[in-house]
Length: 269
Image (cartoon, rainbow, N blue to C red; front, side, top):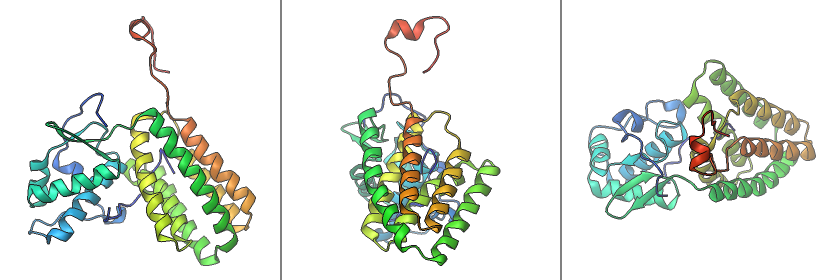
């Protein structure tokens, strides 16, 4: 799960600094392989429009096209999707409940900027959920499911090798949701989808130099253990993987004080 990361699920906080407003390209679902499609220019049914906007913004965050703190202008999004601002507002409210967007009175909507404490809590919950998930899956996984995972690993590797950052980010994160769905528990899959999306946003803010190659190799080791039905090894490898991702995030202040920040030769930790 790289700097972790997934295909948007259609049904589904005060920025320290502002980045440039999102352009049309950032919200364009250009790649069907990443779980999306380009928004139709014809008027969409209201029930679908809100879901498409939620999916587009989620994908843009996960695939690193929208950065934390980016302003999400209602009218601009309405123009992109050819819908009313009311539907856009509904989508932004849903994303706010999912903790991917922050709504500020009199200022509007912004891509969320998770705190360090929130980041730690997200990974703590993931460790609890995914350790139990992988242990159970090791006892039930079928040869067909192993084959499916091997195909996913090949797609991850190809994306890593061609330096396809959005593609590898999506695939490496989606790996965890694929595992959850193999248990046939859609509630678990939805919970993990939301947590992985938030992990992707956290990685945008705090990631350091953890390589996609390392995450992909760790996924291979997890699947190898699952294929052997080795629940203990699979659980240990999953926990080590999540520990590795969290450890390689910079979850501490970059500077202690102004003097330290302005000292000649000062560098980021």
